Length: 129
Image (spheres, rainbow, N blue to C red):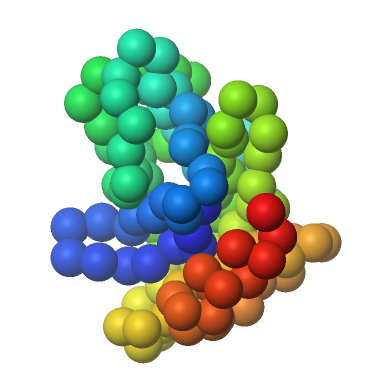
């Protein structure tokens, strides 16, 4: 899955060719109690893009205690394909708003993140498969 990008209408998680997400989770970081929203594909179809905090057609949402993003809060988004997770991406709304149109935010071990071009992300994704 690709990192997060702020687009008109919401924050999205986008697919790469070799990853077929069947579960997407987003949660708060450093907030007590933590809030979370999980979307599960269930019998729904595969999607190329998931708008965080929304459920694609046919997907179900469970464990929803997170219903809106708030300025100044840090979040973690994760995607899963048959139980295999990606490196989670931590983000704030300010970080997403600052991304140029050709860049995405990607996760790195230890909760770190960096902005890369979408082309660089796709090249790295192909090499890792």
